[in-house]
Length: 120
Image (tube, rainbow, N blue to C red):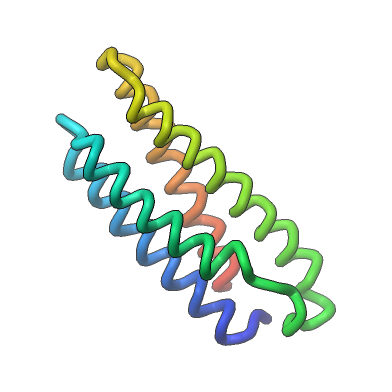
């Protein structure tokens, strides 16, 4: 079982991801790339200060291995999300924009599922 501080961080991250996902869904027709970049920068800043820095010091021995595995996947998926955001903001063709947007939505969904694993 994770300590309350870890649970809170993953719950807050999940809430921010849900809001970010809502923004993506609401702007499906035409993505405002500047607004997307700003929202992602806020998400990335929060992630760097609250999720990426989490340590296994306060964890029970029986959950450390599982936590480390999922935490590694969260960090990896978030880096890939950052890359997809970068590619989306530099895309010029609508087919490329659509492809990147689908990829971003998939990564956000994956991150949300990882948060659920951490909070269960």
